[in-house]
Length: 333
Image (cartoon, rainbow, N blue to C red):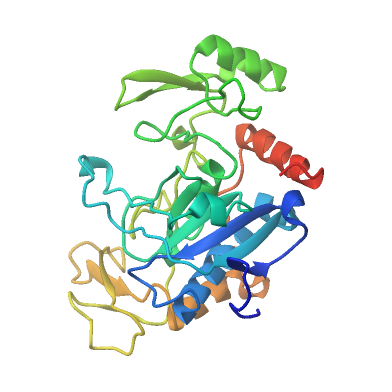
């Protein structure tokens, strides 16, 4: 994997080609949760995000040679935002890049700030996204990369980040300001214009339009990168299946009672599915050690039925993503 000597601001962990012909994604360690850019926990967490998140999604597996992945030599900052003035939709994550980020990391097409504390991940200025490392939510990294570097809008209702193509922005937007624009672009791109539907942004009371169906109303729910932001909670069967690592048990406070390489998190959940049976509070190790072994066991094709089959790229997203991959191959990244 190399070391962190030399003058370049990041170390490649997966290098597929020249900088101007690939999408370069740099992962930063959160300054409050990792000891250094070479912290083994940070290196393992990035490996989980790439191997357990991106590489389990068909589109990213097909286009894996489009990306270069890097570990930054500097810290960034994430974690719960203490100034979030509306926590009703979850406390947002801080997104603070290091000083001189745009100059020092000008080669990067996007930057991921890796953290472990729970908050609502997001993407935006200065071309970065946050990503929590949680074994139940590893594919969220793909959703946030849908925002940066691909520039896609959220498609879930009704408290996401909604935007469409500005005059100088890349083509193939996945969200539209008006129904007429949605129908026109859907038809031009070979999709059914009658599929156009609207959702209302609760913050602005503004209508937005997209030409993909509401997957939440379909059973079984089709996978879709920008409609679904990842597993919402431990007991959310609609959002994701549970991961059952070796270190599990019942009880309100297992910290210190078992050999676990990090503090455990208590979840509310019904382990055996029988109401009031005494196991409604359940805990599990989520990251290192046995938990990491569990995630790799699920990823292993020889390990049985596929586990990560929930998120994939929808039609409106694939147009933009495939276009950008082609641009990179032509040296215009």
